[in-house]
Image 1 (tube, rainbow, N blue to C red):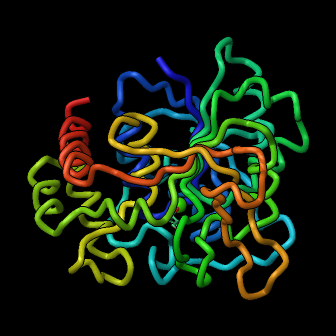
Image 2: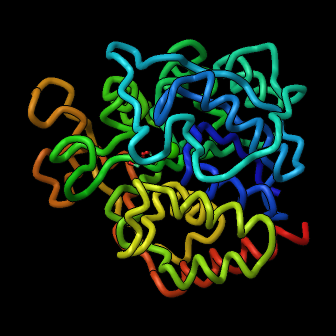
Length: 306
Ligand code: BDR
Ligand code: CA
């Protein structure tokens, strides 16, 4: 089995990603670390614990950074609701899963304690991971790869070119991109393409309680504007981890703009080798949408029986 740490800011689509990962038999999710992003750290941590209570899974949770490295918090309550997982009535959080150690220490300990290398899936701003790399550079050799939902090869969602997770903490993202750790970037453009239809949500609902939960979250996502489908940002990164054959990738030099006020947070993805940088990222450039949708819906139905 493959060992994984999930670093996340739940978050409606974070929940939809985590739910399918926790029922994948080939994955051993060692830790869920929260980070401030869609909503504040108290909410994202609490949401992780509520989701685990609902899914009846015992994964340790560590509380992470309460704000970006240099910048102020900017929340996405318009898309995720005030508490971050609006649209479904979750059971009480499973507080006994919360570790005393913070996310950076817990990630460090998890990485060092595992004999094999561990993959990290990031579904939120990269604050914890940047702090982890700066504090404990020795972890670099223990990380198999970082699979990141973040950035864009096209346009953004919080700036013209800035994607939320990268733009909220662009300095942290820059530290991660420059770390030398193998990175796969599953950007905004992939999640925009890989959409679930309203018919898929109906299928999810037939699948059982987990499907009902995910569908009900998605029906309130983005203020309920789902006529054109549900954009699967974080679930795309989770699906990449589990079924990379659904995606096409291309190696490229990627860096983050941190200076210009008008393009701050933009991921510069240099496919044409214009900047002559080292190809530090495997960038997702395409997804087989039909298969993606089918497999995601199947996975949720299977989650019910695990
Ligand atoms: C990302 O931003 C968040 O709102 C989502 O959860 C996703 O991780 C998309 O830009
Ligand atoms: Ca997220």
